[in-house]
Picture 1 (cartoon, rainbow, N blue to C red):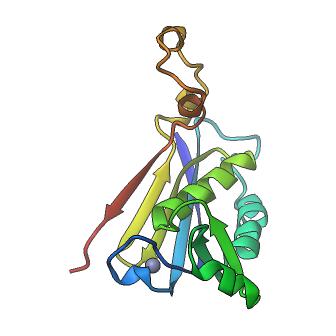
Picture 2 (cartoon, rainbow, N blue to C red):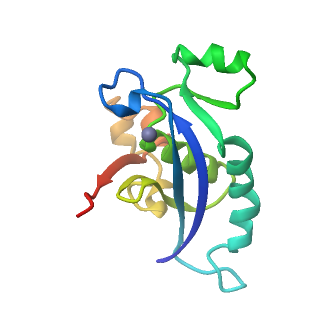
Length: 173
Ligand SMILES: [Zn+2]
């Protein structure tokens, strides 16, 4: 299995609703996102994907939609005020946690046809949230077993979105 990773830096602000810590206040991060693509074989150029393609597609979108924006939960009472003031915001259906932003970037990357296997968002130097395809990308194309469908256990949602979010935090010494 080959993998390539493109690293993109961007700045964003956010705050978390229903949260007791400091992150309940509006604040910002210098985020670093790692977009990992994987493939069992290389293309005719000997690549998983040209780094420039990731830059031109994903980084351009990220610069346009997320960079220097305030990422806010749709339910955030600060949202109408910031919009009224003309502040740049990006509205999310959930709390704009590092996990949710990693998933957002993963979903967009996949929607553009990239064989994305993981997106890691470093919110600080010592905290990273990962959203990855699970199981392996080749298995994602496997059809839902008929047995599971008969038992009514497999929903469209599960079979179409098999990824899971994993948060891993390492504490700085
Ligand atoms: Zn934060």
